[in-house]
Image 1 (cartoon, rainbow, N blue to C red):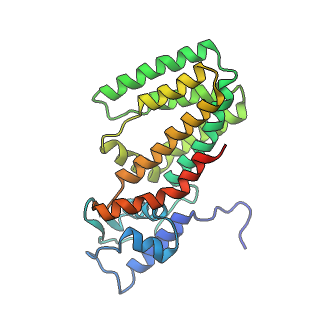
Image 2: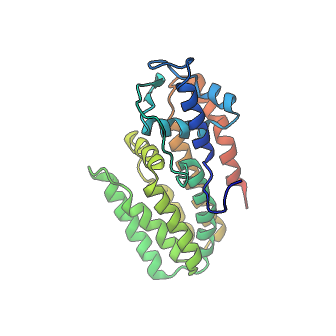
Image 3: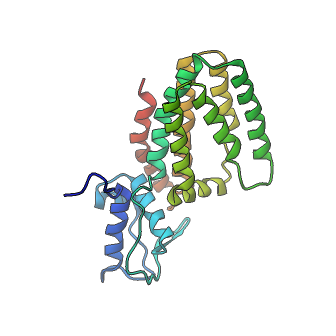
Amino acid sequence: MTSSNEVLPRLYQQVAQQLITLIRSEDYRVGMRLPSERDLAAMFNVSRPTIREAVIALELEHFVEVRMGSGVYIIENSKKKSRFDGKDVGPFELTEARALFEGEAAALAATMITDEELQELENTLKEMASENNSDSSHHEAADKKFHMIIAKATNNSAISAVIEELWNERESSALTKRMYQTVRNSGVKPAVDEHQAIYNALRNKDAVAARTSMRAHLMRVIDHILQATEVEAIEAAKKQVTQSRERFNKARNIS
């Protein structure tokens, strides 16, 4: 039995640990390519996003090397024990949670947002566009500011605290930071037009449109992560990514 304070490993961490066991077995040797993402998902009976999180976790622990367009290869590793943080939520679960929480927050904010807060959002949109046009590698400040203005516009400190904690988790998680950096390296930056749609809904006091726009924006973030971390850059593999999105697409239809 586990104590109530003990943090159980996340699903992707369990898969990563099982992969380490295989890597240390006689069947998996340094230089070998791991089975395809689809095969690993079937082997462990998990989704492809979970496999992708496990692989990136192994890369951070220097057990494998991800070669874009080629596959995942086992590399020399002298560690006797891996150290995964049980509190480290993966980017797919984290962004799905944000879509649900921030979608409802946007709907609530639409009913009570002030003119001053709308002006803050408008200014932040300009900051976001400016950041995107700069050569800076940091494109997160205005993005976070935009979302936190909406959270605070709910006039509910508990909602605001939860959303801020989700952002803090995003910024502190090594796995999530690595995946978001991969997205940035692929050329994707905060989508000003998507944030503009959220702003327009809030300005029009349209709670339904605000919820829909926020969820759509964050579900597209998941799409960007899936696309940017695609290892097997062949058409057949890309078609399989659609199946990975099915679970996350359900969140779009929650009313």
